[in-house]
Length: 111
Image 1 (cartoon, rainbow, N blue to C red):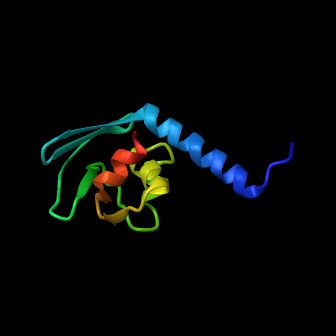
Image 2 (image 1 turned 180 degrees about the vertical axis):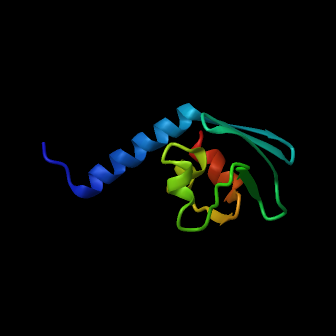
């Protein structure tokens, strides 16, 4: 059986989603959100627009920017995996990376 490219893309997307579900969990306590993953635990507060921000800081001299953050964090990092699956605003500058995602999108992704 030969698969079309679109079918292969869908299979790959589903497999990535399965990996995310196994390695990332989300706890919501009112406006406090905790994202736990193999790459670490990240806390955020629910913003008025339904989004949540998660940040990671490096104090070892690592410098991030918009073009390098994914390669520095690595393909298995929660922020990189999430950004591949749902719309994600990224601020990468100096010693930190912050992602902003819609909480409902994140919940659906990790369901």
